[in-house]
Image 1 (cartoon, rainbow, N blue to C red):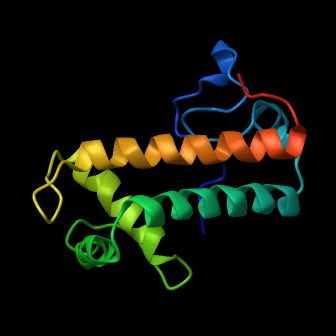
Image 2 (tube, rainbow, N blue to C red; image 1 turned 120 degrees about the vertical axis):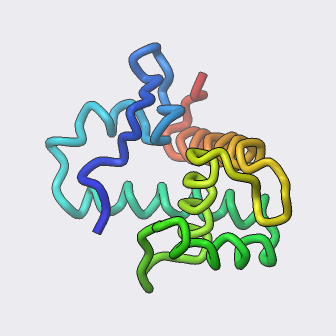
Image 3 (cartoon, helix red, strand yellow; image 1 turned 180 degrees about the vertical axis):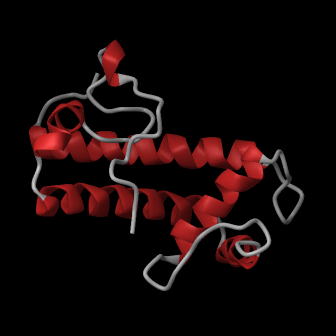
Length: 137
């Protein structure tokens, strides 16, 4: 089960962005969200998860992913078998940042999360431009 909307409360589309820097949805998806059928919403959720997981996989070593996943219960991060290890690692990383805790290898959790977020946004933007043939700036 996921939230009813991907919104994370940091919407940049109100400032003219075609892709939200918070949730990574496209502006038209945010505007039309309440009118979408379940299958349309599920497709958006699926795309967001795949882009986020790909960003984590690219920037976090598998050893570090495993170390993050091991901390899920300790940090009370909800997870289930339907979630990928990358999704769990991302949620743990978010929790580490909120609690201002270091990464398992003593690195900066905030810096790593920032790099993942930038890659996630880059991938969302490329997806938008590839599918809508409009530059996202």
